[in-house]
Structures are given as C-alpha cells and as structure tokens.
Image (cartoon, rainbow, N blue to C red):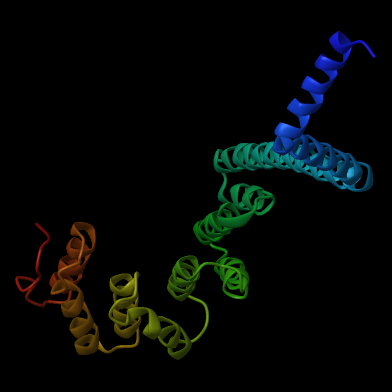
Length: 235
C-alpha cells in the first residue's frame, strides 16, 4: 500500500484512539436520544392529554367566569327593577322572584323581608327571615342580623323574642347594641320600665354607641321621664 495513503488513515485512527471520551459521549448521547424517542412513543399520549386538559380547563374556567358575570348582572338588573316598584306588595313580590346566589341572595332575602314588613305583612316577613335562619350555609353575620330583624317583628310571644335576642346582646357580638335596644323595647312593651331603662343605660354608656343610636336612646329616656344626661355621646 502507498505510504502516502496509509499515513492519513493511521493519523485518523490515532486521533480516534487518543480521544476516547468524545467517542463515549457520542454513544451516550445517541442512547439518550433513542431512550427519549422511545419514551415519547410510549408515553407521549399522556403529555398530549395533559396539555389538552390544561387548555380545556382554562377554557372552562373562562366560560364559567363569563356565565357567573352574566348571572350576577342579570340578578343586579332584576334587583334594581324590583326596588323601583312603588307599591310595597308589588316590590316584595318582585324581590322574592329575584334569582341570586351567595351573599347577593341573602341581601335580597333581607330586602324582601323589610319590604314585606313595610307592607304590613309581618307574618310573611317572619317566614322569609326564618328561611335565612334555617339555612346552614349563611354567614354568622347575616344570620345574626336576620335574628334581630325577626325579633323586631310583632310576631311570636315576648319570651321567645327575648330568648332570640339574648345571645346577640352578649359582649363581643357585632350587633350587641342593636340587640340591647330591641330588648329594651320588648321589656317596655311587657310593662317593665325599670328593666327597659337599665338596658337603655347600658347602650348609652357603651363606648361603641353610634350617634344615631345614642340619639334614639336619649329620646326614649326623656319620653320615659328619665335623666338622659348620663348618656355618653360619641365624639
């Protein structure tokens, strides 16, 4: 063989043997590539499903959000239309027909009861409020407000109404002063003026009393012939 031909071949062979790491890296890379393609052929459909699930979930969330916005807008429009009714009975009926969800439904129910009370339908108003009190998913704040509103209605006996207000008048309760006010009215209706005055004094001396409530307490104390100067007015 021609020495001129053999020299490049030997040089190439020597170069290949002098750099075995490069050869091993190439083989390893090929094996990794083959493995990757094998995994894709075997499990690629799972990746496709995951991608489709993500895309589909995003689209579904967008659809649900659009539906929720449309429902909320429809409920708001129906609520405004109901409140625009001049007649109390017609307004109460329109409010009762409003379809709302969550807190909006609770507020609509409270408005319905208030309108029924304005129309002189105390029994219907009490039944409307009872539907809130019987719903376990109602937030405690709304439940307490419904209980106070129910106790304000001239429905049921004195003892039951006082019993419903008593836990709401405990220290730390959000509607404590309003509950005490209603208890004072009920106590006065029952003929116990000293007891009513004592409750009114509790309200007047509370640091959290509002200007409006303080004015009502003072007015009632004066009407009862009591000294209203002890009332603590909010600054």
